[in-house]
Length: 422
Length: 95
Image 1 (cartoon, rainbow over the protein chains, first blue to last red):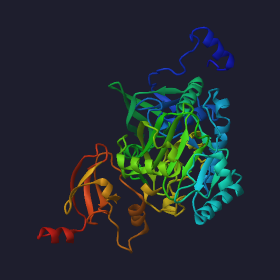
Image 2: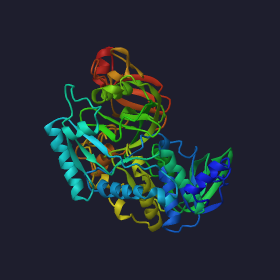
Image 3: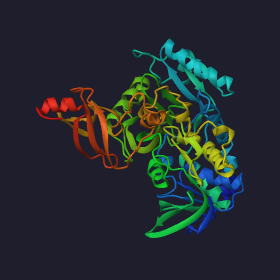
Image 4: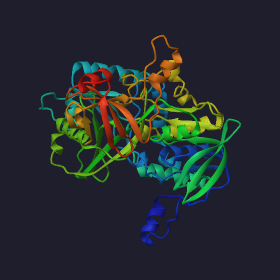
C-alpha cells in the first residue's frame, strides 16, 4: 500500500498528481474464502478490515450489490457521538468513539474526524432534569458530558433564537462527539482492507446461500449476469436496511425489524455559521451541523411509514424546516441544495444486534436504526471479533437477538416495540 | 405525498394518517403460549414489495384502515376499513 503523508501530497501537487495509485482493485470472486461479508458499506468494510488486521483471517471477501458507499454509508448526517444512557449502548458506542479517535492514524487515511461537540438543547426544567439524568449516567460510565447554561449557549451559538416563545434553557453537551467525512471512512477502510488482502467485490448481488447439514457454507451470487457459487466457512451479513430480505433467503425467518427511510438534507454552502453539532430534540426532532465545504447538513424524523425506496417525502421536510426555523431562524433564506434518503433497519427497541445466529456459519450485524454511521468502527470491530471467536466481544455482549425473547430490551427512547418511534 | 383512498373520506394525503403497523399481524389469545406473543409483538415479515398495512385516519374520519401498499414503489392498490363491523355497517351488507 502506498502510504500517504504530507510529503506525498506535496510531491503530487508538484508533479501533476500522477503519483496516486488505485487503492482497491476489481477482483473476480474466488471459489472459496474463510469469511464472506455481505454488504460493502462502512460496517462491512470495517468488519473485513478488523478480521484481517486483528484476527489475522487470511481470505476475506466483501460482496457488495452496488458500489462502495452507495447505501447508507453515503446517506447520513455524519454525526459521531456516544451519549447513551443504557447498558448495552453505553459501552458499545463509547468503544466505537474511542476507535474513531484514532481512526485516521489506524487507516493512514484522513477520515476528517472533527470532535466539535454535540449540543443537545433543553427547553424546560423537566426536559433539563431528564437529560441531566442521562448525562450523569454517562459520566458514571466514564463518558464525557457537561451542561451549558443559557449564557454559555448564547456565547457559543449566537445564532440561536433566544427571543422566541420557547427559548432554550441550556444544553447538554458531549465535547468529544462530532462529525467525520462519510466517504473517507468507507474509502479508508476499503483501502486498508485491500492492503491486507481482502477482496472487495462490487456490483455483485448475493441471491442465495449454500447449505450443508443445516449450516451455511457459502453464497450464491450474480455479477454482471454471471452466476457464482462462493464457498466460505463463515458468512456475515452487514446489510442494514435490507436485512430482512437476506434473512428470509438465509432461513433466519422473521426478525424484530421494520425497514423505514430517513431523509437528510444539505444547503448551499455558506460562511462559517455553526461549529458544533446542534440537536433540537424532545419537542421537535432536528439535528444540524456544517460541513467543511460550508453546507448546512441536517435531518429530522423518519418518513414514518415502512419503505425500501431510497427517496424521501415532503411532509417530513416541512416538519424539519419548521424545527430549523424554531431554533436557527437565521437560516430561513438559505437554499436547500440536495436531499436524499436511506433505508434503515428500525429495530423493535431502537438498538442494534451484532451476534451469532441459530444457523451455524451465519453471523448477523443489523438493526442500526438511525445510529449506524457513528457505530462504523465499533460495529466492524465487534462483528469481526464475534465472527472470529464465535462469541461476542465485551462491547457487543448485550447486543443479542435473543434479548427480545428474554425481555432484556435496550430501549433508549422508552417507546416500546414501535420501530418508527425509535 | 402518498394519496390514500379512504373508503369514507375519499383520496387524502398520507399526512392526515398515522402508520400503525403490519396488518398481517394478529394477536393471539391472552392465554396463548409466550412464543406466540413473542412473535406477534416483536417479529415482522418486513416485506420488500406488496404489503398490507394498518393506517389510522387520524386527521380525518379516525377510522383504522387496511391499506394495500408496495413498500418499494409506494403504489397503493386499495384501502378498506380494518374493523369488519364498520365495513358491514357502511356498505349495508355482510362484513
